[in-house]
Image 1 (cartoon, rainbow, N blue to C red):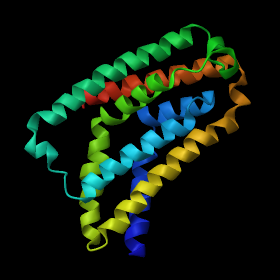
Image 2 (cartoon, rainbow, N blue to C red):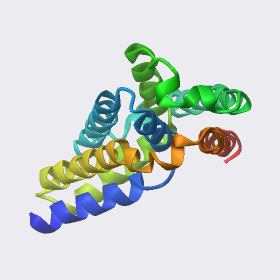
Image 3 (tube, rainbow, N blue to C red):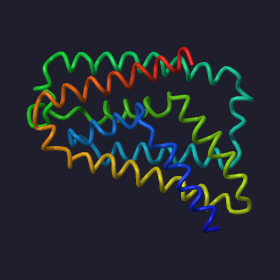
Length: 200
């Protein structure tokens, strides 16, 4: 059981560590100190649901619904292009308005809606959690539950560290120019992922 749990934690952590749209969004919210706990909770709970689905054997959803993968793919491409464009527009405004002390927090509903779309409209999330983690968990029978719980804990610990640890970078992001480069970086990540989904 311990071996299954350790494997689940390390597998999930290795998959989550890659810089992606969801991670970039959590980092940005952490730096702005806006609704960080809610964003971390949404990301961790979403991953837990998807991991549970994979461990429980629901990875066959793409086989049952052939259109599902394509629909998620193009929905994700569209959203990432728009969100990336918004980040570039924010950067073009000079970054001053992006300082946490200089602007009002975005409404919680809008932040959570963005977080949910970045999470659930990303086909890679389903590949990593439902398909890949689900298939690896089968190799640890009869301890799939320990594997799945540990994988979910890896997600929770990562997003907690990313969201709340971002404030350690606050001195760097006290400069407006740092926010400009962050927004350019986030926008570039969004568009690169969109291109990967469209042409990959």
